[in-house]
Length: 245
Ligand code: ADE
Image (tube, rainbow, N blue to C red):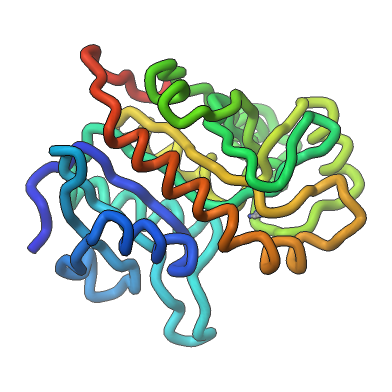
């Protein structure tokens, strides 16, 4: 069964990121969002609020999680249409930056998002490709989660080129991920309030490659993410949350 509408829709790319949340909130599998998309929907309740959690699912050809912006966009659209959430949450792992005070296990709730690897030197298309988007802050949620402020750069690569590193420094990026700016765009299309909750598994400006730090730190970082999302769901907000501007 798919829910008619939910308080929280939480989107995560990878099953490994989602599993601790599914277990913690005792979420149950729901009907598929589409016969042609491997996304997986789970539903349940916590702290008296209804929750839907969606993962991007496994690619049937490459036998891995469907990470990245293309699937993020598609799954956000399908899940919003199915669940009509009051708040859409892009959750999961990100790269952090020591130069911006970041450390492994830090939790961010960024309010600015943009694509860092979509370069189109044509007026208007350039701005569209970068997709700079600022969302409303929610101090009650931020306080409950003890989340840092930040700026999130989204792209389709785990590593970063020297010119992207320079861009991150110029824009004081604190989180690098592979989904949030795409999901923020879909939330704006649907006029649905949006936040991102991102936990640092690796440091982009460290000498260690992201892939090894990510693998080593993921499970510990997810403990922090579960804790934060539990606190988020437990938070009672009196005012209506606003959609991304
Ligand atoms: N997710 C976790 N770490 C990441 C990184 N360094 N870049 C993009 N996505 C990530």
